[in-house]
Length: 350
Image (cartoon, rainbow, N blue to C red; front, side):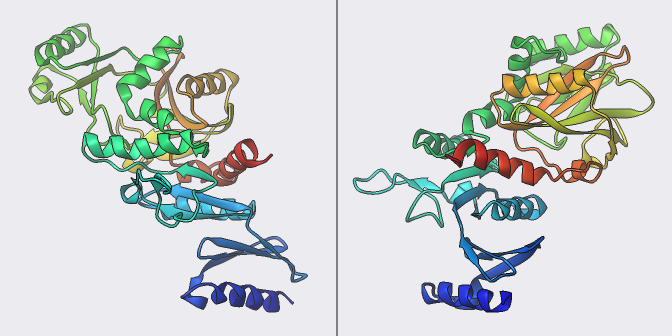
């Protein structure tokens, strides 16, 4: 019965497309249902042979879908929505009478019902502004964008993140963001003389790229700006033995999962070889993570929190496009399902 239904669906779609059976991209069973992704169209086939066509289409903005992209597609399919990967580098504006002003490959006939931002490419200032303009424009046209352009802007700029956290009264390390090299050196020298270490970070960056720790005066010879801007932050010594911090995953104002990351060095990024440990999320850490996400107006976030040697929590970073593969390896939760469910039920369900 199921085999006949599958054949019927494939034949039906083959009749209105040019590549026929080649459209069958992937399939996966979910309990008693089977989901077939056919060129962005989802057919849900039950063991009785009935089929349900998709409820809508989602654009997943990414240049590297990988494991996370696949998890999202399957999660959206489980809710009856098809999804397509799209690079923001291929999107553009066409300001012309009678034309859709936003051009998204694969969505020429109609804009997506919603967009999930899984990655924003780097590039020149003009290129990055263009990518963010696409996200802003979609929101202006009442297309839900998750996280939206404003949230991405606030989090990708470490200086603005530090300001917003501080402005919200949340604990975050002492930070200086400035252009003048002489002033940056003076701050660094003063901190070192007081017995503090400093972290120098690029204003834009992720996964620990370009971060350096300033430990002694001779390190100041290597103090460099990031495209003319210095971002200096007082180093926070963590509690316990070795190096560690905590990642808290927040969705729609609720902390849903957490882990401890133990770094091989003072950098605790999983991409840099840090190991993941499951932890019980205490109320104080959960509250800080939720408040940090709200301060940056995000739908969801990965919030990095460190406990210092005095036992106090400090928010290090708030990520608007966080990875969660490491988190899932130690937690009994499927993050993609929670994200897809939140987007659909909060923004698309009438």
